[in-house]
Length: 303
Image 1 (cartoon, rainbow, N blue to C red):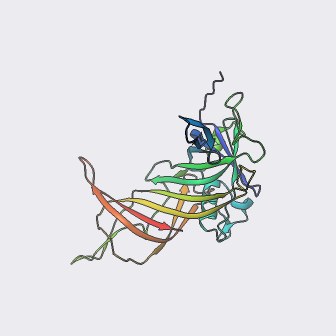
Image 2: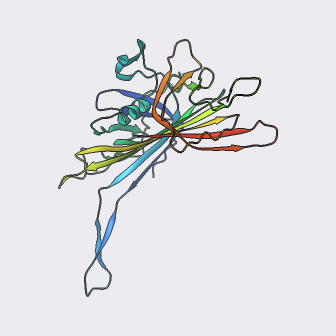
Image 3: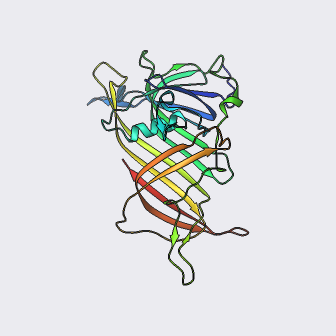
């Protein structure tokens, strides 16, 4: 029986366009399932057997440090003349949600000796005051594309580690030190008799996006011929220090951009996350001993 010790191992993502990046993960999980349907016959007790009713599929999910040292398309994708910073998962999420033809391209995922082709299901990260940001990603695995098994590799032997220098992989980690989330993430209270409106202070934000994919299979093929991205849902949970429900029955959608930076602000650019058509969905407040009142609001948008 093989034993594997997984400790901050590297996760390598390779896109069909040749762009690849290695991320420093803190944990990883892989799951597979096969749908089976029993077949019954009149006059016979019990089933004749269990037969496949859907293609084998799996999922891989991992948490990793939110690094912003990657360059989209070898630095050719620029904002204001400066190459966009971020990580490959952030680029993939942006590309899929803004896709016009709904065609989603899978990517190769290599981790802990395993290698498979997957499609991004969800991506999230958190950012807070004076804290290191962490991210999580989940992919659906439809198969390796070249063999009869849904994924290739074994949990044995040497772990896949394209770069053993974990210190190098941890450079450019997103941090709350230089990150600023202002309008429209701040809540504004009405004018006071002797002062203008009061703007809330943003302490942190949790971002998440999820995708729905529709794989298309042909007869004689378990691996999908293509996969269409159908819908996506995006949300940001913002933590503040003032409370205003801010809820309207039919409010005007708002566009926003989250600008995330690292501690190495002088040499590393900022990661941009654009959100279109945001609407506030909910608001809440909590209070505890020895702390200021914290309020939370959820901003959502769909694609």
